[in-house]
Length: 76
Image (cartoon, rainbow, N blue to C red):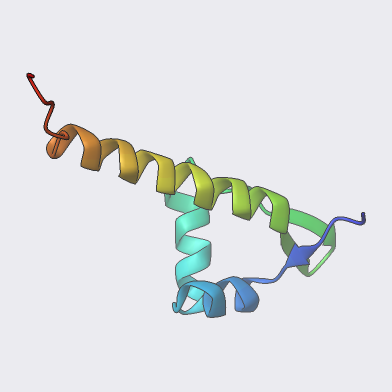
């Protein structure tokens, strides 16, 4: 299957933020996927890398929630 790419505008729509925020995340967050320059003036993100980043964020959030609110263990 061919790789799919998203623009900064598409990512902004995906996350409900302005495209400027996408570029700030790219600049300031080392875990945010790196941009791919397809041609001069054409920058895109790989959908597969975006989805992997989303999954890792969800896993970290779930892990933090488990540590903050551990499940009760039955002693019987």
